[in-house]
Image (cartoon, rainbow, N blue to C red; front, side, top):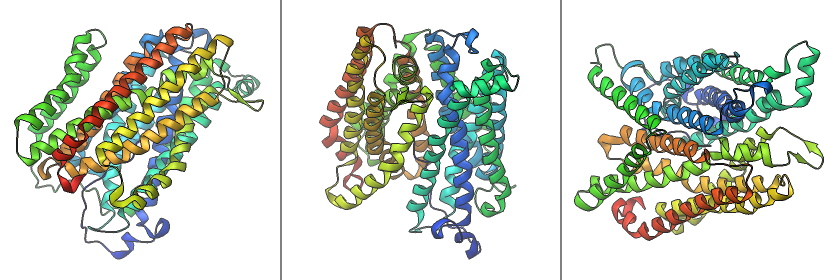
Length: 505
C-alpha cells in the first residue's frame, strides 16, 4: 500500500476545538478522513482483488472470457489511469473546486463506478472502470491535502496524524479482499445464492457490489462529519482568476500521455520512447545544468526511474501473483480452505506490522541511518529477492500446486522493500522539490506509480501457468532486472547524494 500524499503546512485561523477532540488528541477532522479513506481503499482493493480473475474467467463461469494478454492490458490501463488522473484531479481541486469538494464529488463518482461494475454486462464493466478511475483522480490527491490542512504550521502531531491516516488505508486494503473474495469465489456463498434462488455465476458481481457498499459507507461518514473539516480545502475565492488555459494544457497533456501509453500495447517503440524520457531528463539536469534546482530535479529523476521499476514488479500482486495464487497455489492452511484473492490481504497485514518497526528503526539510527538513495537500493534488493523466491516456487508446480507459504514469503519481502522505498520517496519528493514546483513534483511521483502500474500489466501478459520452465524464467528475468537496477543505483549513490545536497541526504 502506498502512503498518503503530504501537503504544504497550512496556518488556518480557526477555533481551537477544530484542532483537538479527535483520535489520540488529534483534530476531530482526522477521524472523518481516516474512515472515509479506509472505505475508499476498501472499495479500490476489494475490486482490484477480483478484477484480473473476473476478466479471464470463462463466460460459463460468470466471467468475461478475456485472454490473459487482453486482461493484462485492461488491468494495466485501468490502474495507470487511476493514478495518472490524480495530476489533473489535483489541479482542478487546487484551482477550481477545492479539496473538500473534490473528495465529495470524486467519492460519489467512485461509488457510482462500483455499482456499475456490479451490473452484468461488458459495457457496464468498462463504464465502471472509467468512473472509478476518474473519481480516484479527484479524490486521492485531495484527501491527503485535507489531512495536512488539519494541522497548524509546525504542529508536532502532523507526522503522527499521517501515520494514523496511513493505517486507515491499510486496514481497508486488508479487509477488502477478505470480504469481496468470499462473495465472489467461496463455494459456500455460491450455495447460499442457490438457496435464495439466485444464479451463483453472478457471485463476481456481489463482490463488486460489496466494494460499492464500502464506498457508500465512506461517503456517508464523510458527509455526516463534513463540518469537522469546514476550515480546510476551500475553493479559491470567487474573485480569484481561474486558470482555464493551464487547465486545458494539463488536461490535454494527461489525455495525450494516457492515449500514447495505451497505444504502446500495439506499438512497443512508443513504450521505449516514453520510458527513456526520465533517463534523458536526469542526464540533462544532472550533467549539463549546474544550478542547485537542476541538481535536485536530476535526483528526483533518479528516484522516479527506480520507483517506476519498483511498482512495475510490486503491483503484479494484482496480476501475475494473483494468477499464480489462483491456478498454482494450494489455497488451504491446516486443512482450512480460503479464496485465492485473500492472498492480496497479506501485504497490508505486513505493512501494519512492520510500519511501526521501520519508524522506530529510522529514529533509533538517527544520523547513522542509510541515505535516501541507499534506502531505495534496499527497497529494490528486497523486491528482487521476492521474485527470486518465486523461481523455485514456479519449478515446484511440476509436482502439483505449491504451498501458500511461498506467496506469503514473497509478500513479506515485498513489504520490506515497500517500507524502504514508498514512505521515504514521498518524504524526499516534498523536501527536494523547488518551492515553485512542489505541486508538480508530487504529481510526478504519482506519475511514477502510474507508469509502473502500466508496465506491471504489460509484463504480466507473459505469465504462463502451463510451463514450469517458462514460468521460472518469467520470475527470474524480472528479479535479474531489478537486481541490475539496484546495483546501478548503488553505484550512483555518491552522485545522487551530491545532487541532493548535504541537507537532504
